[in-house]
Length: 422
Image (tube, rainbow, N blue to C red; front, side, top):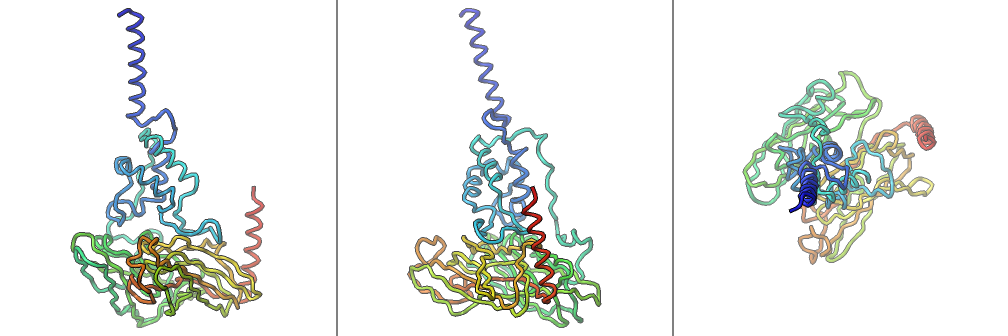
């Protein structure tokens, strides 16, 4: 072989090795999108809340080694907007929520380009520091408020077998409260081990636990009344995970100082609720319910509730003059997720007295509904998951006429300022 041929061979081998090194270090020549620089921050912000050790998600997604085997599945889930779970129709109604975990179009594009380029790792120096999550039996709201709860209410224990059907545990317990107090914040949590088996759990009229939904802090001048001697009814949905686990829920309550009464009382309603439900076999049905507002009202949050045949639900305002406004529409309801959509302060609906809140619910009792156990069966109202129901959990405050007028004017000025901003 000539010297020139040897030099050409060495050059070709060198180029090949160069690209092998690029590929092995995750620095793909076709893209500048890497896990460490671009994807990890998205997963920390939108996914780790559920996808980390000890939580209900099926796999952790905190490190490159954990994420890489699932790259193509992650792409599929985010492109179809199945994950993160956020089922609000983004084409209609209010789109500003304080707890919005959905991905933006640019975030989805980043993940798609990363997967399509071979899911490169990237420079470890670009990796953001690990996100710190509450560990042990810490109260999340306690970290925010700087103190432990003022009062605890605990449910009776339940043991879920390793295998078997889902169970609903509904114990009623004394609150232990000897005088009326006003709630500033409330959080509910299962035991650490129990978080594997709790689909969701309610302390009726107080708070609900679900994945990514531990509790709430009420806005300034608002709170929930808790009367002396109140009894708390728990409603907890358990499912089996392959081992026997015993669990209970604990509600943590942070009160306003004694004698301090917030200006607005936070109230809860199951709007649209009706037992008159008729869903024939092989059909998609639509049912509606109405909730009149005798006073000016500010809606704080919206959470649709149906069972496994639930398809979609909207909440609209029918104003006294007959005008109709779509407030929020969930177009892809999923019984596996109980999401409370909490409106931003200056986006929460302000509704005049005399408004009707209209809740429309669609149920899919056809074979195209993959969750449907039997599309040949007639379905009516009932508590079991195989039965159906529909209502919207809505938290709200009632306003005085004067406050409504003032808030409406402030909202108009805020909207005008936001729209005129560059």
